[in-house]
Length: 606
Image (cartoon, rainbow, N blue to C red):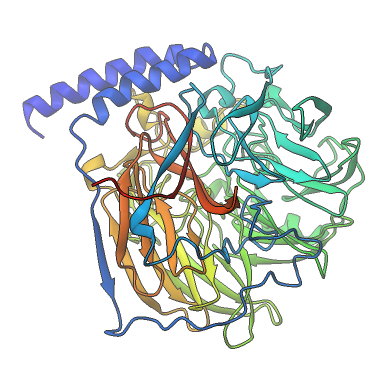
């Protein structure tokens, strides 16, 4: 490193250190800290680029296959007009049967309006479009806007009641969206509650507590709703003493119908409601010493449900301390898995492990899986977590059909140590984050968006890790003077990238792949028009041909695209809504406020 680079790095580090104190003192200083740091980190960012590689010379042929909602979507509303759940439908396929915006007309796509929240935070909401209104959330607000004009119908602010200055919620400042059912909206909060609102007015109807904010627990996931129940869990499993749990709440009152611990429950753990049955043998897969409490297994994105079998699919995150897996030997059930519960009782049915044998990279199963029926008629569970692989499980047999890399993989099996640095990919904030796979039944392609960003970690001594107080971040890495390295040292931004893979759902072989010079973390939305929409962390929004990855349209928006991308019909024409403005100390993106951008077809003026 040159002397100039050392000086610049020192300046940024000192700035980060000073501003981190502000970061933990309140919500506004938190945003200010990230804004100041990112004004340095994103100076002279390059334009977005896409490079496509195709495995076959001929494009995948789209069929006229079934594009109606699966019968697993019982009571689902019209998908032509709505986007009624975080991933469009309860089965999380993210496919839209709309085709007005297609491979021929997409060239006329333009911005129709923008709704600016005026906030600077990691805006990752998955918008909903139901009953003529578009719904979004921020860390503390929920709002309703017109889906064509962006005019605000109402906006409700919630004060997080128990956030201490050191609370992780002040660092995260994130909420991933709402759920809708029977004229009500539901969302989680950073102080451990679930709130219900009147869809028409935004008036709060009830509040239910499912987590303990005094030890750092938060509720950031987008809930899903079905059959009078609201499903949501708690995070964060990276904090000492926090155990992941899943809940079903009664939609009319917020009463806890059931509570299920996703890692072994012990007698001193609190009971908030009737307990979902879990195998007692799970405790034998945790080989913790008496001074290392079982920690982890949070859920922080969203969920999937099969309405016919009433099975709830829960993505479960890592165990902790994250990097020091030797302190929690064993397979650590049911972390880093998709756990299947009976949606009516919370009882365990089975689970699909992504990192068998234990995880030491913070490679959560981070996003909702998709339930799909492939072109060969196979029922498949598909997901792509933070370890950078796409999984295909046969739902009839439980068999793992394939596990394929969909981003850069490096040193995945190398143990971490206290005496040397270890560089691994995907890194702590690499791989598949909060948005999951999408499936296009016309081409039988599973689409994945991933971050290529690697991390370097050196472990702290065991005694130091064990000395961490309950409620504090518990990663297990050697402390650094630079707070930006609290979760390991990320590679320089110049080395990060993003991937979109299009993979045959039956064989697991990729047909085309696309590399961006920025991480690809937004929702991916394929449509019957033959196009797939997505965005990247460089603020670029794209439409590509689903069958071959060809770029058909692109535009730089105002703010990183890391939230939901949805499409629907409003006022007689197809629209696309995009959440922009992911702005965080973790993600060095350009300074921009959180916005919903609505696009539609229009005639060019040139």
